[in-house]
Length: 236
Ligand code: CA
Image 1 (cartoon, protein in one colour):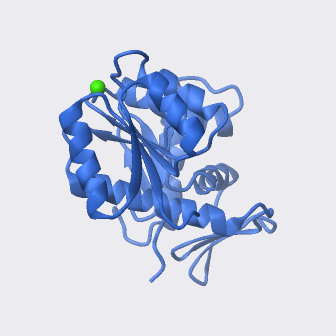
Image 2: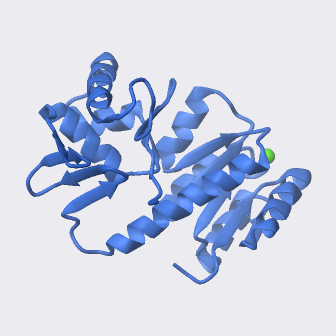
Image 3: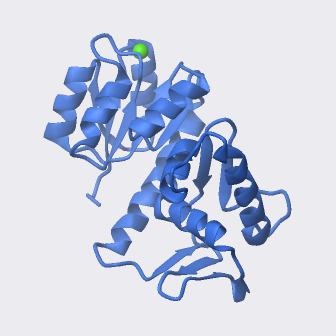
């Protein structure tokens, strides 16, 4: 990663843009701003930001459209910050390629927490380089892809093939919210809407096996009505 993290702030509402800018300044993050979709695309191309904060209601183009366009050539994490709180809007943005979302009004602490977790994920991806990853490690969780085995600490966890596929998919996108439909498309062949209930069942059995504390989500977060995310756990 570059010495200094660069963040592109796409927001047409000046007071909110100022709030975000002030927040980023407190952490010494470098940033650029854009107040509409075409400016956002221009800035994304010219500055190659490390993270993009994206409003959806923009004066010229819909933010979701901007995300789709950016995704045709960039993998930079995109955190949506939007007043749209409907699940369908969040799902649409995530499926267009957003990594995370924050609903307005948001707290600056929450925004900074999302940025930090995105940076952890970037650092992790960078540390993996371009080599084929043989081992996935997150907290006490280890996936050995070659042996197709999963361990929690030293304990070997026995997963059913479907649970293993789900875990690998979440691990591959660690830190990112994956929508139900995305997961179904990747893991189920010919996914039907009705498969959502079986996804929930497999996810529940998977979590029973890998979550160390009953009923407490450490590795896999549920986003009700939207999907799931594997949380990147910081090393102690
Ligand atoms: Ca707006």
